[in-house]
Image 1 (spheres, rainbow, N blue to C red):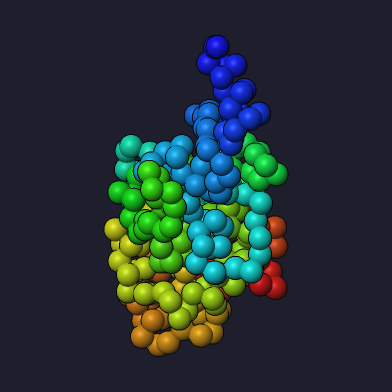
Image 2 (cartoon, rainbow, N blue to C red; image 1 turned 90 degrees about the vertical axis):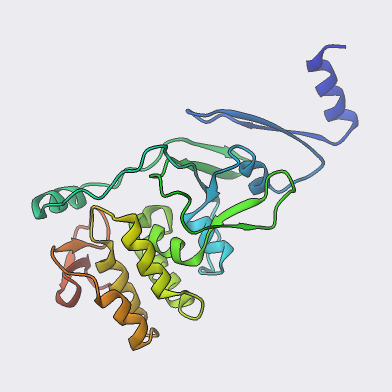
Length: 244
């Protein structure tokens, strides 16, 4: 019996399940014995990969929305970021559309989108329940809040991000979040967006807000890419969607 025939036999008579991930980049084929959660199968694509953005929001109960997209981050080898921005460069970048990873595939009515994130040394990544060989990995709450601020498009949009900051108040360690921000050394001043989200939530203490007050406000910044109508929040030097 050929290998192909043997696989067909196990699929028909046994419990063998086949998962074909026809990604434009990094295609993968996986077999499981019996039913296993799709996220556990996705974790096996890259042992050091981890779930992020909206998927991490769901893991930490930061949203009541159900997303049909699974976000799985595989870090690049080289560390980027940290260059000095200019106001003209910030304005130009955020007036355009946000780039979205096209490395995605739909399996069992769910979209799996692979993100090729910057190298962070897996900062803020934790293990949660999963199969023994490939324990499921996800960003912790502090890292999740940073990621969804940086890429609202992967997080349900700015309104969902704002709700996540409300839901996170009792669990987040703002001192740790601020420490992550400094270590990540982003080119853009995302601390302004985070400070605004915290203030907008209305449930963060003075000591928590003071952690964000330690960052400088050197540039005018934008809450999201491609906003058509905006208003300016002077306290955070931030352009936000009008009426937000």
